[in-house]
Amino acid sequence: MFKVTIDNITVEVEPGTTILQAARQIGGEVVPPAMCYYSKLKGSGGKCRTCLVKVAQGSAADPRPMPKLVASCSTPVQDGMVVQNITSPEVIEARKAIVEFLLINHPLDCPVCDQAGECDLQDLSFKHGMEETRYVEEKREFDIVDIGDKIKLHMNRCILCYRCVYTADQIAGKRVHGVMYRGDTAEISTLINESINSNFSGNVIDVCPVGALTDKTFRFKSRVWFLNPMNAHRNCPSCSGKVTAWMFGNEIYRVTARKDTYGEVEEFICDECRFEKKNKSDWTIEGPRHIERNSVISANHYEKSKKPSIIKPLEEKTEAPE
Image (tube, rainbow, N blue to C red; front, side, top):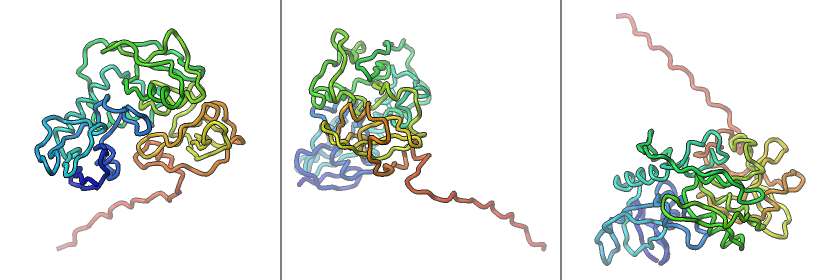
């Protein structure tokens, strides 16, 4: 086992573990953000650069620091390595610059975007974004297109994280889309107007960290903070059948895969469960899904009901007469 220290917290991990994976074993604010890395997709990571950290000590055998910031999602730990994340001003400044870079072409679609309220880029820009942009050049623009029967592509919002490409290649089993062109003209597109029609194609929506890929069956129907995410399951011959059913009363507005603390899908689900099973009778409702307190959905938290706290006004102090 290797000992690695991240933000003054030491943890033991197996050889071959990356810095990001080691930080996730610690948890909390120590964990660097990740927009492109996905633990369940081979080859992911190293593209968005939001997980950059400072290695203050390479290892116990070689205590020299690494000369530049490194991507924690693709850098393996060494025994005795010392890493700085939120304790390094250099990392914080670099992360602000990366967020500014990601927002260069990203439109201000939050008021109308279906991803609002559960968007990783929204959370990242809230922590590290600037109040105004310094970008004066013309933004790139793409037409909104359908790349599947039930999938809408907003290329203007895409940050080219490649997650959807890896998902279609490794999970769906048939990939007809990818990254076309290079540089600032690069875009996600299908080859000669083909459409994504795999039985697991809807998973590209779940892995997208922004609102570039959206569910046409849920489009503009409701905001996530108005819905109650419930754990549900059914006997499905194609997948595990374990999903999150987003309900308003007794009506199911959308169905998604269950996600863990870091927003990664626990088990990928089929398109039949996602798009076609929208009746409450189709599912066995297990109960409310746990909501993190930092989520905007927690505004309507229903897991535990608490009486509202009453703050009593301070009593005015009167000076005693002399």
